[in-house]
Amino acid sequence: MKDIVVKLLPEVLEIQDKTLQEQVIDCWVDAISFRGWTEELLRSIPFTLLAENVKITFIDHVRAVCRMCMAVDDVLIDIHGNRRTPVNRDYLIAGALLADVGKLLEFEIVDGKPQKSNYGKHIRHPFSGVGLAFKHDLPSEVMHVIATHSKEGAGEKRSPESIIFHHCDFIDFDLVK
Image (cartoon, rainbow, N blue to C red; front, side, top):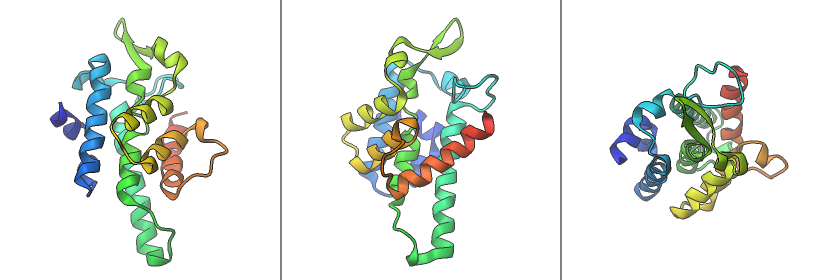
């Protein structure tokens, strides 16, 4: 199963801290196992159920936003150098890859179509994502990115990693809406 995660999300290999990299992979394996998601289903489900006719898939959204986060960090390093606000790149990548992992608990397939599960009607993905991250002993800095990335994070003071992720995530989301 770990091989499937790396195949679907090769950006996980950009995490330099090997322990953190393994924790992220294990979190995904756990989420995939919860409903028995297959690689085919993961590659086909839309990344959101909040808009009609979404053509962007869940995995493509996770990868695109993660890569946007890395690109933003690269630009900030390139232009601002050591004058920039420090960003922990490993936490940024881990948070980006895990921010939506809770959707694998929130969604289910019924009659071949993705829909919000009963669980998902009560627990949105930022909460279940933090729960999964906590279960796998991820750093609180990564859990902060997961917890604050959507409307649940409104009003919270976001870390630099959370700020970058939040804006990259909404670039992809708002373009679909």
